[in-house]
Length: 287
Image 1 (cartoon, rainbow, N blue to C red):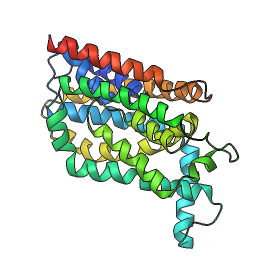
Image 2 (image 1 turned 90 degrees about the horizontal axis):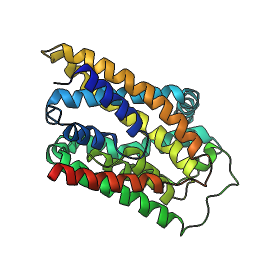
Image 3 (image 1 turned 90 degrees about the vertical axis):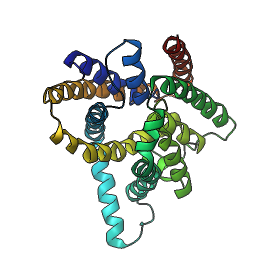
Protein backbone atom coordinates (compact mmCIF):
# COMPACT_ATOMS: atom_id res chain seq x y z
CA UNK A 1 0.00 0.00 0.00
CA UNK A 2 1.31 3.46 -0.89
CA UNK A 3 2.01 5.98 1.85
CA UNK A 4 1.03 9.60 1.28
CA UNK A 5 4.69 10.61 0.85
CA UNK A 6 5.25 7.85 -1.68
CA UNK A 7 2.09 8.88 -3.51
CA UNK A 8 3.26 12.50 -3.71
CA UNK A 9 6.68 11.43 -5.03
CA UNK A 10 5.15 9.13 -7.64
CA UNK A 11 2.54 11.74 -8.55
CA UNK A 12 5.17 14.42 -9.10
CA UNK A 13 7.24 11.95 -11.09
CA UNK A 14 4.22 11.08 -13.21
CA UNK A 15 3.38 14.71 -13.91
CA UNK A 16 6.90 15.26 -15.25
CA UNK A 17 7.52 12.00 -17.08
CA UNK A 18 4.07 11.78 -18.70
CA UNK A 19 4.72 14.95 -20.69
CA UNK A 20 8.47 14.63 -21.07
CA UNK A 21 9.22 11.90 -23.65
CA UNK A 22 10.65 9.54 -21.02
CA UNK A 23 7.73 7.26 -20.00
CA UNK A 24 5.68 7.91 -16.88
CA UNK A 25 4.51 4.32 -16.50
CA UNK A 26 8.05 3.03 -16.86
CA UNK A 27 9.31 5.35 -14.11
CA UNK A 28 6.33 4.54 -11.87
CA UNK A 29 7.31 0.87 -12.05
CA UNK A 30 11.10 1.27 -11.89
CA UNK A 31 11.46 3.88 -9.12
CA UNK A 32 9.61 1.92 -6.36
CA UNK A 33 11.80 -1.09 -7.16
CA UNK A 34 15.02 0.95 -6.97
CA UNK A 35 13.92 2.53 -3.67
CA UNK A 36 12.82 -0.88 -2.31
CA UNK A 37 9.28 0.28 -1.60
CA UNK A 38 6.78 -2.37 -0.68
CA UNK A 39 4.66 -1.75 -3.79
CA UNK A 40 3.08 -4.47 -5.88
CA UNK A 41 2.83 -3.34 -9.50
CA UNK A 42 0.15 -5.97 -10.13
CA UNK A 43 -2.08 -4.65 -7.33
CA UNK A 44 -5.24 -3.32 -9.03
CA UNK A 45 -5.29 -0.29 -6.73
CA UNK A 46 -1.74 0.64 -7.73
CA UNK A 47 -2.96 0.67 -11.32
CA UNK A 48 -5.96 2.79 -10.29
CA UNK A 49 -3.55 5.18 -8.58
CA UNK A 50 -1.59 5.49 -11.82
CA UNK A 51 -4.79 6.17 -13.74
CA UNK A 52 -5.81 8.84 -11.20
CA UNK A 53 -2.50 10.69 -11.60
CA UNK A 54 -2.78 10.33 -15.39
CA UNK A 55 -6.28 11.77 -15.16
CA UNK A 56 -4.95 14.80 -13.28
CA UNK A 57 -2.40 15.30 -16.04
CA UNK A 58 -5.12 15.08 -18.70
CA UNK A 59 -7.16 17.75 -16.89
CA UNK A 60 -4.13 20.05 -16.80
CA UNK A 61 -3.51 19.50 -20.52
CA UNK A 62 -7.15 20.20 -21.34
CA UNK A 63 -7.19 23.39 -19.27
CA UNK A 64 -3.87 24.53 -20.73
CA UNK A 65 -5.26 24.19 -24.26
CA UNK A 66 -8.92 24.82 -23.41
CA UNK A 67 -9.36 27.63 -25.94
CA UNK A 68 -7.97 25.35 -28.65
CA UNK A 69 -10.29 22.53 -27.58
CA UNK A 70 -13.29 24.86 -27.78
CA UNK A 71 -12.34 25.75 -31.35
CA UNK A 72 -11.65 22.13 -32.28
CA UNK A 73 -14.94 20.84 -30.84
CA UNK A 74 -16.85 23.62 -32.61
CA UNK A 75 -15.06 22.66 -35.83
CA UNK A 76 -16.10 19.02 -35.49
CA UNK A 77 -19.70 20.06 -34.83
CA UNK A 78 -19.64 22.32 -37.90
CA UNK A 79 -18.44 19.47 -40.07
CA UNK A 80 -21.14 17.15 -38.70
CA UNK A 81 -23.81 19.77 -39.37
CA UNK A 82 -22.53 20.29 -42.92
CA UNK A 83 -21.95 16.52 -43.31
CA UNK A 84 -18.49 17.26 -44.68
CA UNK A 85 -15.31 19.07 -43.74
CA UNK A 86 -15.58 22.55 -45.22
CA UNK A 87 -12.54 23.52 -47.26
CA UNK A 88 -10.26 25.73 -45.22
CA UNK A 89 -11.84 24.77 -41.88
CA UNK A 90 -8.59 24.09 -40.02
CA UNK A 91 -10.28 23.40 -36.68
CA UNK A 92 -12.64 20.80 -38.15
CA UNK A 93 -9.87 18.97 -39.97
CA UNK A 94 -7.61 19.07 -36.91
CA UNK A 95 -10.43 17.65 -34.80
CA UNK A 96 -10.97 14.71 -37.13
CA UNK A 97 -7.21 14.12 -37.36
CA UNK A 98 -7.18 13.84 -33.55
CA UNK A 99 -10.07 11.39 -33.63
CA UNK A 100 -8.28 9.23 -36.21
CA UNK A 101 -5.02 9.43 -34.27
CA UNK A 102 -6.80 8.31 -31.11
CA UNK A 103 -8.33 5.19 -32.66
CA UNK A 104 -5.26 2.86 -32.61
CA UNK A 105 -4.39 3.38 -28.92
CA UNK A 106 -8.08 3.37 -27.97
CA UNK A 107 -8.85 0.04 -29.63
CA UNK A 108 -5.61 -1.66 -28.63
CA UNK A 109 -5.99 -0.36 -25.07
CA UNK A 110 -9.51 -1.74 -24.71
CA UNK A 111 -8.60 -5.10 -26.21
CA UNK A 112 -5.10 -5.80 -24.97
CA UNK A 113 -4.06 -3.38 -22.19
CA UNK A 114 -4.58 -5.86 -19.35
CA UNK A 115 -2.77 -8.64 -21.22
CA UNK A 116 0.11 -6.36 -22.19
CA UNK A 117 0.59 -5.00 -18.69
CA UNK A 118 0.25 -8.46 -17.13
CA UNK A 119 3.24 -9.51 -19.23
CA UNK A 120 5.38 -6.38 -19.15
CA UNK A 121 4.54 -4.46 -15.95
CA UNK A 122 7.69 -5.40 -14.07
CA UNK A 123 10.73 -3.28 -13.19
CA UNK A 124 13.05 -5.34 -15.40
CA UNK A 125 10.80 -5.16 -18.46
CA UNK A 126 10.17 -1.43 -17.90
CA UNK A 127 13.92 -0.78 -17.77
CA UNK A 128 14.45 -2.65 -21.03
CA UNK A 129 11.68 -0.80 -22.82
CA UNK A 130 12.82 2.55 -21.38
CA UNK A 131 16.10 1.89 -23.18
CA UNK A 132 14.14 1.02 -26.33
CA UNK A 133 12.24 4.29 -25.96
CA UNK A 134 15.54 6.15 -26.12
CA UNK A 135 16.48 4.26 -29.28
CA UNK A 136 13.10 5.19 -30.79
CA UNK A 137 13.73 8.89 -30.10
CA UNK A 138 17.20 8.73 -31.69
CA UNK A 139 15.79 6.90 -34.71
CA UNK A 140 13.05 9.48 -35.20
CA UNK A 141 15.58 12.32 -35.14
CA UNK A 142 17.96 10.60 -37.58
CA UNK A 143 15.25 9.59 -40.03
CA UNK A 144 13.66 13.03 -39.91
CA UNK A 145 16.88 14.67 -40.99
CA UNK A 146 16.66 12.76 -44.26
CA UNK A 147 13.34 14.34 -45.17
CA UNK A 148 12.61 17.78 -46.53
CA UNK A 149 12.19 20.59 -44.01
CA UNK A 150 8.66 21.10 -42.64
CA UNK A 151 6.65 23.63 -44.60
CA UNK A 152 6.66 27.11 -43.10
CA UNK A 153 4.17 28.46 -45.63
CA UNK A 154 1.26 27.59 -43.35
CA UNK A 155 0.65 29.07 -39.92
CA UNK A 156 -0.16 27.52 -36.56
CA UNK A 157 -2.54 24.58 -36.53
CA UNK A 158 -2.83 24.73 -40.33
CA UNK A 159 0.52 22.94 -40.52
CA UNK A 160 -0.79 20.07 -38.39
CA UNK A 161 -4.13 20.08 -40.23
CA UNK A 162 -2.25 19.56 -43.49
CA UNK A 163 -1.45 15.99 -42.43
CA UNK A 164 -3.21 13.21 -44.30
CA UNK A 165 -5.58 10.82 -42.55
CA UNK A 166 -3.05 8.00 -42.92
CA UNK A 167 -0.28 10.13 -41.38
CA UNK A 168 -2.45 10.89 -38.35
CA UNK A 169 -3.28 7.19 -38.01
CA UNK A 170 0.45 6.38 -38.17
CA UNK A 171 1.16 8.78 -35.30
CA UNK A 172 -1.67 7.11 -33.38
CA UNK A 173 -0.17 3.67 -33.97
CA UNK A 174 3.15 4.81 -32.54
CA UNK A 175 1.35 6.39 -29.59
CA UNK A 176 -0.09 2.95 -28.80
CA UNK A 177 3.44 1.81 -27.90
CA UNK A 178 2.85 3.59 -24.58
CA UNK A 179 0.68 0.63 -23.53
CA UNK A 180 4.03 -1.05 -22.84
CA UNK A 181 5.65 0.26 -19.62
CA UNK A 182 8.88 2.00 -20.60
CA UNK A 183 7.65 3.52 -23.84
CA UNK A 184 6.58 7.14 -23.59
CA UNK A 185 3.24 8.30 -24.98
CA UNK A 186 4.61 11.77 -25.65
CA UNK A 187 7.87 10.36 -27.01
CA UNK A 188 6.14 7.94 -29.38
CA UNK A 189 3.69 10.57 -30.64
CA UNK A 190 6.49 13.12 -30.99
CA UNK A 191 8.53 10.59 -32.97
CA UNK A 192 5.56 9.88 -35.19
CA UNK A 193 5.03 13.60 -35.74
CA UNK A 194 8.64 14.08 -36.77
CA UNK A 195 8.46 11.11 -39.15
CA UNK A 196 5.44 12.61 -40.92
CA UNK A 197 7.46 15.81 -41.32
CA UNK A 198 6.11 18.03 -38.55
CA UNK A 199 8.45 20.39 -36.75
CA UNK A 200 9.34 19.65 -33.12
CA UNK A 201 6.95 22.37 -31.94
CA UNK A 202 4.03 21.11 -34.06
CA UNK A 203 4.74 17.46 -33.23
CA UNK A 204 4.70 18.30 -29.51
CA UNK A 205 1.41 20.19 -29.81
CA UNK A 206 -0.15 17.31 -31.74
CA UNK A 207 1.13 14.84 -29.12
CA UNK A 208 -0.33 16.90 -26.26
CA UNK A 209 -3.71 17.20 -27.99
CA UNK A 210 -3.75 13.47 -28.71
CA UNK A 211 -2.98 12.68 -25.07
CA UNK A 212 -6.10 14.32 -23.66
CA UNK A 213 -8.81 11.94 -25.00
CA UNK A 214 -6.72 8.80 -24.42
CA UNK A 215 -5.69 9.59 -20.84
CA UNK A 216 -9.05 11.09 -19.98
CA UNK A 217 -10.97 8.08 -21.29
CA UNK A 218 -8.75 5.70 -19.31
CA UNK A 219 -9.39 7.66 -16.13
CA UNK A 220 -13.15 7.71 -16.67
CA UNK A 221 -13.24 3.96 -17.29
CA UNK A 222 -11.07 2.92 -14.35
CA UNK A 223 -11.68 5.42 -11.56
CA UNK A 224 -15.06 3.84 -10.63
CA UNK A 225 -12.97 1.01 -9.17
CA UNK A 226 -12.31 3.38 -6.28
CA UNK A 227 -15.85 2.71 -5.09
CA UNK A 228 -14.78 -0.81 -4.21
CA UNK A 229 -11.63 0.12 -2.31
CA UNK A 230 -11.73 -1.49 1.10
CA UNK A 231 -9.02 0.69 2.65
CA UNK A 232 -10.10 4.29 2.12
CA UNK A 233 -6.68 5.59 3.16
CA UNK A 234 -5.55 4.89 -0.41
CA UNK A 235 -8.04 7.51 -1.62
CA UNK A 236 -6.24 10.25 0.32
CA UNK A 237 -2.94 9.04 -1.11
CA UNK A 238 -4.44 9.19 -4.61
CA UNK A 239 -5.66 12.73 -4.05
CA UNK A 240 -2.24 13.82 -2.81
CA UNK A 241 -0.51 12.09 -5.71
CA UNK A 242 -2.94 13.56 -8.24
CA UNK A 243 -2.38 17.09 -6.88
CA UNK A 244 1.39 16.63 -7.20
CA UNK A 245 0.95 15.27 -10.73
CA UNK A 246 -1.20 18.25 -11.75
CA UNK A 247 1.31 20.82 -10.49
CA UNK A 248 4.27 19.11 -12.14
CA UNK A 249 2.32 18.55 -15.36
CA UNK A 250 1.57 22.26 -15.62
CA UNK A 251 5.24 23.16 -15.13
CA UNK A 252 6.27 20.48 -17.62
CA UNK A 253 3.96 21.58 -20.42
CA UNK A 254 5.12 25.19 -20.04
CA UNK A 255 8.77 24.17 -20.13
CA UNK A 256 8.44 21.83 -23.12
CA UNK A 257 6.37 24.30 -25.12
CA UNK A 258 9.22 26.80 -24.78
CA UNK A 259 11.96 24.19 -25.24
CA UNK A 260 10.65 22.98 -28.60
CA UNK A 261 9.64 26.46 -29.77
CA UNK A 262 12.94 26.57 -31.60
CA UNK A 263 14.35 23.87 -33.90
CA UNK A 264 17.73 24.19 -32.16
CA UNK A 265 16.48 21.69 -29.59
CA UNK A 266 15.84 18.02 -30.31
CA UNK A 267 14.85 14.73 -28.70
CA UNK A 268 18.47 13.59 -28.37
CA UNK A 269 18.98 14.71 -24.71
CA UNK A 270 15.84 12.78 -23.70
CA UNK A 271 16.99 9.79 -25.73
CA UNK A 272 20.38 9.75 -23.99
CA UNK A 273 18.66 9.95 -20.60
CA UNK A 274 16.34 7.01 -21.43
CA UNK A 275 19.17 4.81 -22.66
CA UNK A 276 21.39 5.52 -19.65
CA UNK A 277 18.57 5.39 -17.08
CA UNK A 278 17.13 2.20 -18.59
CA UNK A 279 20.49 0.42 -18.74
CA UNK A 280 21.48 1.55 -15.23
CA UNK A 281 18.11 0.56 -13.76
CA UNK A 282 18.34 -2.85 -15.38
CA UNK A 283 21.81 -3.32 -13.87
CA UNK A 284 20.74 -2.36 -10.33
CA UNK A 285 17.50 -4.34 -10.49
CA UNK A 286 19.27 -7.46 -11.75
CA UNK A 287 22.13 -7.20 -9.22
